[in-house]
Image (cartoon, rainbow, N blue to C red; front, top):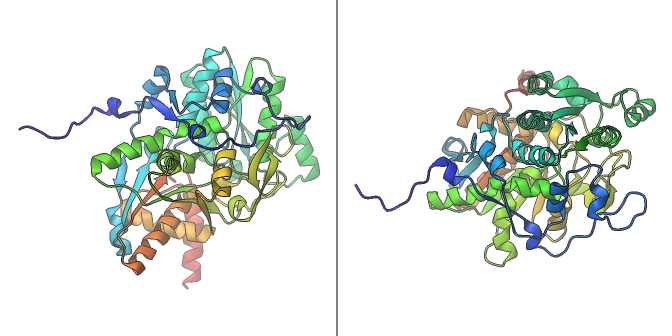
Length: 435
């Protein structure tokens, strides 16, 4: 039987390039040196990052080739599925067509592995022996731990103390992959001791954990720092999500009107939206791109656009960003990956230019949405992903009121199988409220 459509093997469908949106945007305001306040030079990042990653951070080439060693590891779990959420559509009785890109199928259960593999590779080829990093919910720390193991690198993770206590199984996952995990703030760094002296009961923040990880990287030989969000190079690596999604929509004969991702520093939302936005920046399409952030850390909806540090101790360059302030103490929400005070420069500029928009979602609304999604689609989502699901549901119900059949796409950035205590708390409070 003769077919009219070419079907590719999975490894052929894995993109061979990353998309760099900086090629299609006006120049961003430069990062500034934390001491001189002068525009940052690429060489000034070398104490923290591998040279190959620094080159990507400042590059304006539209397409960056994915090294074959990185792509080989991507093929273990990529391409990830684009799924029609027919069960959720039925539960909502909406005429909208809802799709989700299922990044939860990666070996670590989240999208963070896409940049962890790349960052570990570029450090390996430079001769680095050790990596340090921070983690909020633990998905990034888990990803870097296994990526480091692939390339023979030791990984040391400073995990926000709140999540260290809330999510013990993510700590165990990191340790199982070979990572060394510390609660942050802790007593093993000057920055950590300073934070604890100021507030011994602090639950910690991502900004504090970044300070500790950066300090360790700068003081320990053969060591570099790795960051799981915010930076341009991280957005670059995550565009593999949207590039695959666009190809999959072409195969399905459909195309999104609304694109949604949860938002902490921007890697998840940027990964799903930027490849589509290249068409909007070229004047060839229009999308409603919505960043779903936590109402407990609303940097996009309530923050200001200005220069701010990426960490709490002022060690990092000053970044032009929407921020609540580097010393901001977020609410103790279960979505630890969204408890970051600022947004990356790319996503901040797109918001400032009104190319994207943001919505803040309350924690109860998120878990209500995640529970509905679990019943309808059989997947228990991570608390971070619940923010995107909640906004997708809002959009689908709006389509029902309007009688429109718009196409809604959201990024399911991770599963919640290691976040079940959070669901237990939600289920208990919901049951108590109905008595």
